Amino acid sequence: MQGDGHECRGFNTRAAHILGSDKTPYGATNAPLYLSSGFSAESADELAERFAGRRPGYIYSRISNPGVSTFEQQFASLEEGRGAIACSSGMAAISAVILTLCRTGDRVVAGSSLFGGTLMLFDFLLQRMGVDVEYIDPSETQNFARAADGAALCFVESIGNPKLDVVDVGALAEICSTAGTPLVVDSTLATPYAAPGRRLGAHLTVHSTTKFAAGTGNSVGGLVVDTGLFDWKKCRDPEVSESAGRFGSELGFLALARRQVTRNTGNGMAPFDAFLQCTGLQTLGLRMERHCANAQALARFLERHELVESVNYPGLQSSPWHDIATKQFGEACGALLTLRLGSSTRALRFIDALDLAINTANLGDVRTMVIHPASTIYRDLSEQSRRSAGVTDDLVRVSVGIEHIDDLIHDFDCALKNGETDDTTT
Ligand SMILES: Cc1ncc(COP(=O)(O)O)c(C=O)c1O
Image (cartoon, rainbow, N blue to C red; front, side, top):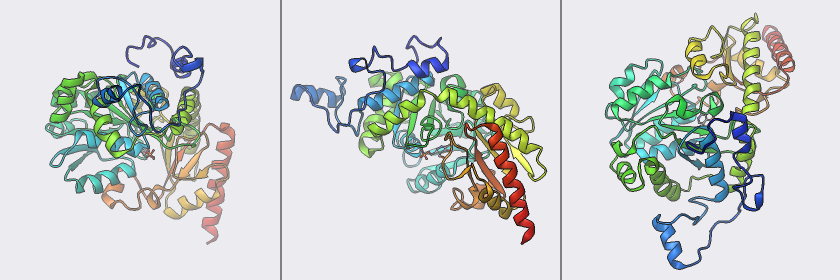
């Protein structure tokens, strides 16, 4: 974490060694797994003090749990943040931020190219709660200057899923800081490996840790990280600023979120999921290196393929977001790419013709995964939302895994050719 004295160590070293055996009971070299709903206290007074927040200590696993805390500290450290709250999913993490910072009558400013689940949360649930959402093209950074003023929060994805547009987080953070509005960045696709949230300039980051953090698709989870760059004493929401006055600006947001949202909604992470995700996180850097290198090589191959209409990947020179992507993330431009194949029929046939790549709604797994967003994740959204998110009927989203690149190229080449053969025979 920020100030843990290990900032000078490399990413992979910190990921692997955060659980120093000096910090764990019995010198265990792995994260603790306490499958206990409640935690006893030595006296009635001690438990009352824990409830009042005057003494540290675990109470009940719906609120927090030692293994879950380990995951929170481990992830916050990689984000170079102040602390984190782990949630039952990425959507739960986004909901936790909204429930902490918004109330009826508030306005949220959001990038228009968001993950479909987030758009549905904003379009249906937030509107029902009486919270207005104003969408803005995140590449038009200056438009946020007018909108951020008076808003409860601004929300963007550092790399948009599936548009793969890259937001200039530093420029946006400057605008939001001037307006006194927290900037919340969903950095699921970038991960702390591409850029720790604090270095990006975000005030809060959210992650679906179901994806690259877990890495092998064995659990669902999410996380909110406070990077320490926003002064919560100045937050427009009176309860957040009051919490910052009570617990200090560094703990103001996290304390309120834990006390009012995690505790009262029960949307925290389960201990077993935290154990799996702690294990995954230790190899995040290694996997991301391979994910990104494979994505770059596959994107280059597909860009030259005669049966592909177009390829979108921030690491390609042809991407409109190439410059900002390389400025923010260096060579780690992520594992997602999309391709357009000219028609919905060709897109579906191509997916069916793949042998190695798996047709599924997940991403960020060591195995390559594909999906046709228009008929799945975006099927319940309006035409306008789909267009803003870059979802066309012929689009295929690819989450590039860590397989041998030659096998991936062979699989994609064969599927393109086989899908084409099918198309011409009907
Ligand atoms: C960018 C982004 N944010 C949030 C989510 C939601 O995460 P989860 O499925 O863990 O709820 C996803 C899921 O794909 C995502 O891609």
